[in-house]
Length: 280
Image (tube, rainbow, N blue to C red):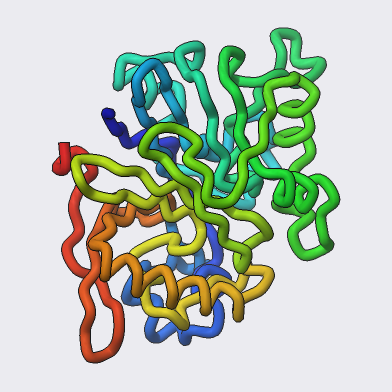
C-alpha cells in the first residue's frame, strides 16, 4: 500500500461558522481570520494505492460553478486536483475508485466536470467506481433546507446517471485494509475511512474534525446538522483514537496534514503534527 496527499487548493469560510459556539477570542488563535472574519481552509484529499486499485478519497470543489459561486469562497493557492495527481505520476483516467466521505460541494465537486461542448456534465473519472451509501445519498438528493445549498445537484446526480455509482455499508471493509465508519452529526451517513498502514491506523477525518483546532470536544462547527450527536461521536472517537494510537489525516487544516493524540488532564488533546510522507 502507498498513500499520497492530493492538494486541491484552499478556500475561505466564516470563522464563527467553523467553530460554532466557541468564542472568537479562543478560535482566532487557532486560525486567524481576515478583516471579513473569514478563515482559510485546505481541501486536502488522499490517494490510496492498494494492489491494482487507485482510490481517491474526496476530490475538492471542482471548477464548474460560476464566478459568483466561487466568489463566496475566495479560492486561493496554486494546487489543483489535476496538477496534484500529475505530480504523483497519475491522471484522472488512472483512478479506479472515488470514495466520497459525503456529498457537500467542497468534498465531491471534482467528481463531475463539463462535457466537451459544455452542454452537460460527465464523470471526471471515467474509469472509476464512485462510492457513497444509500442513507447519505437519499439525504443529499432530498436535502433539508439547512443543507440544500451544500448539496449541488450537478455534483451528485450525474454520478448515478453514469451508472458508476455503488453503495457501501457501515463497518464494511471496502478494500483490503480500508474499512468504513459512519458519523451522523455533521450530516447523515458521513463516512470516515480507517486505513491500516504499516501497523498503524490512519483515519481520514473529513468533517468530524476539520482541523487540529477542532480536537476539543466542544469545538463543533455551526454547519453540523445535529451538533449534540457530533459531541458524542467526537468523544467516543477521540478516546478510541488515543487508546488505539490512531493517526489523524486532516482534510481542511490549512497547515497540518496529520497528527497523533495524547490524553491530558483536560481530556484528549493534540500530540505531534507531521506530514503524511514522513510515515512512508
